[in-house]
Image (cartoon, rainbow over all chains, first blue to last red; front, side, top):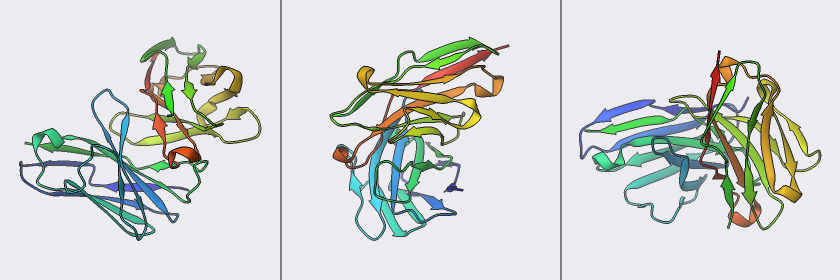
Length: 117
Length: 114
């Protein structure tokens, strides 16, 4: 149980393109979803927290207009990197949690490798 | 503010040897603690978690961890390493006072030698 599917697994595109990444909880309802960014040989950096039906909460330093997050249903959240540039190249990982409480684990997708040329 | 320190960015053990990955945390309240494993180009998989109750927690793949409040530690162990254990391991902490968010350590890459 607790499977999270993230798609696509890899994207290579030109600078200026907008890229959408999907995160789906396959066998549970995800009240809360999280989006992380991971740089090479580094830990995960939380970008934003999204709750179904409400606006995402962004971490300090993360541009809301650059990284658009939509959590339209209890099983789907999307991250859109708008007008992507080479510095946006990174490994993006989503996670989902079935409740609000912090003792419930987050379940992670397999990540999306984004490469902007 | 919460923080997580993983001592040793790289740990190398021989196949069959004991695995010990260290994690210390800083939290103003009793935290919830997690260990995750990440294989190359993949997301994170939950190994085990401590929330309340028994301080020795058993997880998947033969791993276990012990919560020691007095030492603010949550070290991960496995009695006998297997080649398939080679991966990166992340310790993470969350508490209600920090918006229920996870704070990750920097990660420890485990190498298993044959």
